[in-house]
Length: 529
Image (cartoon, rainbow, N blue to C red; front, side, top):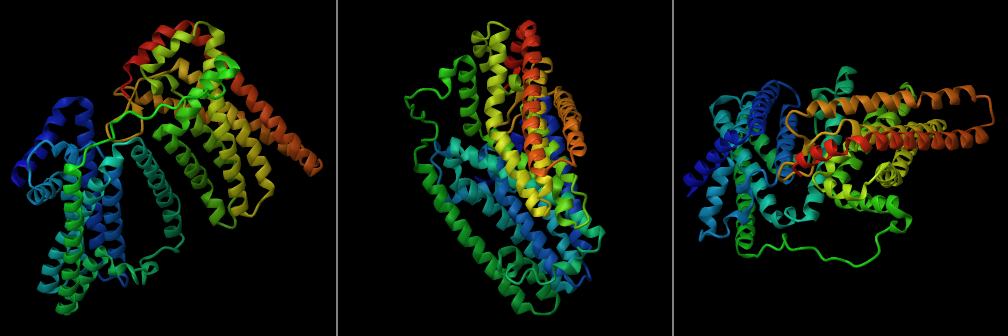
């Protein structure tokens, strides 16, 4: 059975290459990244040879790789159908042979091979002598087996949840710490390394407790064998194997339960009777209510708000961590935060998809089109304005410069109005079809339309940066006025200015959409959501 499932896994990869151009591009990019990661991890682990904190760093790297195996299956659930035990329920298969076969199938593919190649770098970086090499090879194999078993246990245990809407919400929120981690690595780590604050010695002692985790057991087993402590090395490997055995036993029990439990994730949700919020305010209120509901129900929207927060913090991290950092960087975080809110919603037509065609039944003229676009802006504004203000206040408090909080809030409100106005214009003048892959809540541009999204990103970012200049100039010109009166007037005028920009964008977009509605509907129909 193991051979059959491995062949099935490989055949699925081959068939995906024949399915479409996007599948070929995705496979090539994924394989390329796997090769890059394998080479980078191998070189990094191999370069630790002779370092004082080599074991500590190896433990950290092994733990990071295990954490990746824990998180990524949750995000990519559904991309590999062998991950879902519901696909196997119709077949009379025994659980234990099936578990072994699924484990073998999980080890097939470019990423498991890349992981194994990267782990073998620890043999070069830590092992010495024939015993160290043998234990290193065994430790790398056990570490990979632990990662695969952990991933299988997580996906099998959460399969029913991940097929539900709440599970997709969970998968959406997983994107937020990944973005935060990426921003931390790109913003903080290079600066700390350049200043000499982050060296190999900085990690000395970090595995005081991590050494007893499975990745730490593998790393320290290699070090013990290299130092001639064969008994300690074998004991650590035995303990790691015991952890894998327990994890495998839990996975088998979870798999057996999943194979005989009926799937209720596809049942229709309960319909609650009640008035639609804001519907009493006419067509604009109806559209605002519709978009408001999807702001809290669509997993992608939940992820967008988290990503905006991470981006604002990442932009300001330099001035927060560096005492001599220029506080004006906080204003840049306000610009980026507002711009990305507009960017994430600058293609309302493509993001709505074919359902937009049904909505056009109520869009009979320029006035109704204004109601549609302004309803979207209202639903976004009631979330975005408090979010931007709270984040700006928090950044000012962390930076210990509360005086910049008022100016940052003014930039938030003016930039948000400009971003929403530009998003309304881009949604009408440059819509493009979008697609969503199975298992991920995030929408992306369809093949051949990536340049539209890129143009929208830079266009809105540049437009918001230009639009907030009058607010900054007004702050500079009124620096001699009484603080309280100036701050109140600045925030009030910035809010009115942003509202005017958003209203102007709605009017421009509605006027353009009046003559482009058939073409816009064609774009919506081409979206695959």
